[in-house]
Length: 290
Image 1 (spheres, one colour):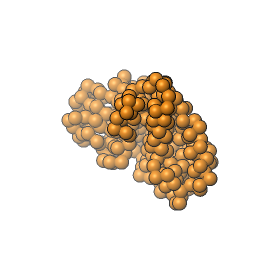
Image 2 (spheres, rainbow, N blue to C red; image 1 turned 90 degrees about the vertical axis):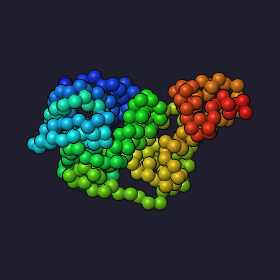
Image 3 (tube, one colour; image 1 turned 90 degrees about the horizontal axis):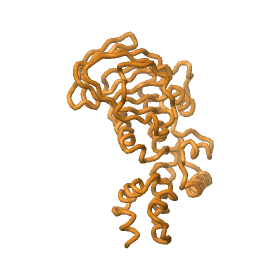
Image 4 (tube, rainbow, N blue to C red; image 1 turned 135 degrees about the vertical axis):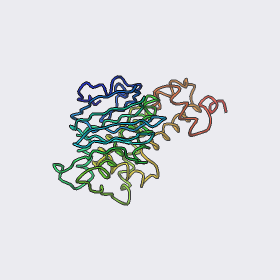
């Protein structure tokens, strides 16, 4: 889990929600709500993305990278502060926002695996009050996972972190270059290797990094090629297989639903029930009774 190297600041204070203790790697996601005020922030090892959740626009002054911006921030507005760049902010009304910190070393690793560029020249650019529907969508998906205590699992969080990193590199890096995309999907031998691994370790916490390492490619390229080959993302396929395993156990055994949940890689009875209902339209108990 990432331990943010951040100076104490009035800007952050205590979050309403935080992924700090949820075991998320390379990314820290926190939801904040502040009364009017001001403060400084300086993150030495993470890039910071702030997504406004304010129900009413808030007048905000920001100073960073030698530039000053003053304007109204409303729901969906985004600011980006690169690592090692001090930030001062002042706001005149209650503010609500989602803060995402993504490790700079993780961004560098993704860049090394996905683009052909001199990493010494790679620099994330500061941004004020931008609209980016794709970035906003990623942020809201992370917020949903935060509220449900990572219901989707670590593989899903890793997938979102990789998508976020690639999007930042594509859109907001000074030496940006579009990541190369390999076409045609994975060779059949590698597809079978990955599917067998998922089937064998279905009950465990499977990580995207584990699957990519099986065939020796980056997590970003693995996700893209896997979807080309199977027609669904690694996370969606894993979830489908866990539900299928649960169906078998519900029909063929007298195990409790709680035990079946754990045997299929879910962390609780409610976790299994929620996902089972979404995919089948019924609860595990109803499925068993039928």
